[in-house]
Image (cartoon, rainbow, N blue to C red; front, top):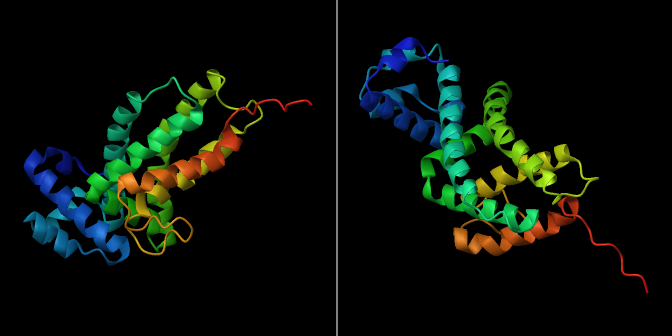
Length: 220
């Protein structure tokens, strides 16, 4: 957790530090991200950072959590207005459309998401991914339960399997259009949100047998 000094900063100064940290860690990750650069871009002394955070790892973890919080708050608003009078797969496809549009329009949060998921230091990655994934779980699990209560998910489907699939799929959709070497199958790299839509629909339709109640076989 940041120190009390961090929370006593005026909003402008705190925003400068956070923006500079998101840019630096987003571009270089934890391992090669420079506190000197962050301090310079935020127009503060480097030593001030250690008045706000115990060490670099705590600072990085806070930046990753803040990015995850911003993403969560925005996506919760987008999800709230989606049409519930459709199949679970149709609704989930709309969620993924909104997700791809969010990341196209929020390069800082996208970069920090990449830093969170692709960090090479095992200890650091475990800490920041655990925090980020908690946001995913807290949002997604109740939504799965809502659709189960509506009878839109197969009774025998395992909710933990559904949740796990989404925890793998969502970061992939967030990052694969913007970073090389992440998608060897669908060619998401460089595609706009509009161009991503047929691919997202293909993926979700392919997964729908895991989620959706299946019609009874036709007897002849």
